[in-house]
Structure formats: structure tokens, C-alpha cells
Image (cartoon, rainbow, N blue to C red; front, side, top):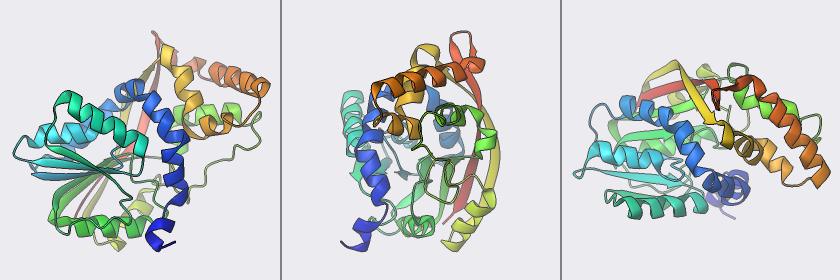
Length: 281
């Protein structure tokens, strides 16, 4: 196996199996929940009217489509992701919505042989925290960017600042022995929680003019979608796939009860604490 094939093997497997399928199933509610982050990213990442945009960890293409609309028919946007199920959905959506200035590449942005100096903007909505070697990944992305190109991405701040995102894990942990607290140094949702770490990674991979802006966004998930959301996605969803039915029933009940404090007016409402990061190639 060559180095490119070895990189991010666990993440590639995860997003082509359980997590990829779950995100496809939950696309509608997730699109609604994540829309404010995409709007923030497009506003700040594409303010200089780029013509060619790379969307890293594009998933089913919501931010890719938004970027393509922003640059217009004279520009283009390329979405890259490791997940075949998510990219299949992205391509179907592009055809259905007749968005012609997008294309998608199934590849790992850490190792993919991008055309050098090809993009004048790079964006990512929660797609850059999963590299096993983030410095190598951002070096590779930097090679694909033109000199002066703007990199903009949104990443989660700390678990302590995102209690909604950790509620399911805390509630399920006593019932699921396989569930472990996330390792802050491992690839995952909170891998970029430390802004100083993010700056060091970007500096060492050749990016400059680095800005990390602390941003809070009010987010909601419809109450009718909440239980499916918290029991299908993330570590709890993965752990529940391998338990017996009585354990699953007890765990789902405990998780459901734990989210009661977030429910108001038919939705779970919470504060999302993120970093908006910008840098230049």
C-alpha cells in the first residue's frame, strides 16, 4: 500500500460506510441546521469575487453549490470528498438543480494530485478536522492554490463551548462501554478546537495572514428530527450500530431525555461555537 492509500484510512472507511450513509439519510435536516455556517463561509470566504473555488470536504455539495452561484457562470467550483455516498448525492443534486459550473472529485485532499496553482479561493465547512496529518494536507492544498488565494474554513471550538454537541455522548456513555471521550489530538469534530494549534498548522504549511475569529451562531434542529439526528450521527450513532436491542432502547431513551433542556417551540435550539479561519496562500 502506497502512502496515499495509507493516509486517513479510518476516515475513508467511516465516510464510505456508516457515517456516509447516515449523512445521506439525514441530508434534509442537516442542510437546514448547517445553512448558517455555509452562509458565513460564503460571505467571508468569497468576498473578493474569486473565479475558481475548491471546496474541501464538500459532502453532498451544499457549500459547493452556494459557491458556484456566487462566482456565476464565468467561474467554477470543485468539490472534493472521500465519501462515495455523499458525492453520489451531490452529483444527483447538481443535475436536478441544473448547476453546470460545479464538478466533484472523490479524493483525499491530503494526498490528491491537484493541478498546481489552480484555485483562487479554498473553502471548507467542517471538512478539515479529519486529516491524520493536517500539516501535510494544508501543504497539499496550498500547492493547489494560486499565490494570494484566500483559504476560509469553519471548525468547531471546544467541546466545553458546544454542550449540545456533547450531550448525546454524555448521556450514552454509561450504557455504551465502547464509547470513549474524543481525543483532542486525533482527527475528529473537535480536532481544531485550539486556535493556537490551527495557527501553527497553517504557518508550518505555508499559509500567511492567518486570522481565527471566534463566532457564535444560533442553530436549531426540528424536534421531529432530533432523535434520529442524535442517534444516527457521530460516535453515538456508530456505537449503537453494534449493540443489542435492549441496550439500544435504553440508550435511545437516555439520550432523548438528555436533550429536553434544549427544546423550545418545536425545535432543539442551541449555540454553536466555531472558529472562522482565514489565511492566504
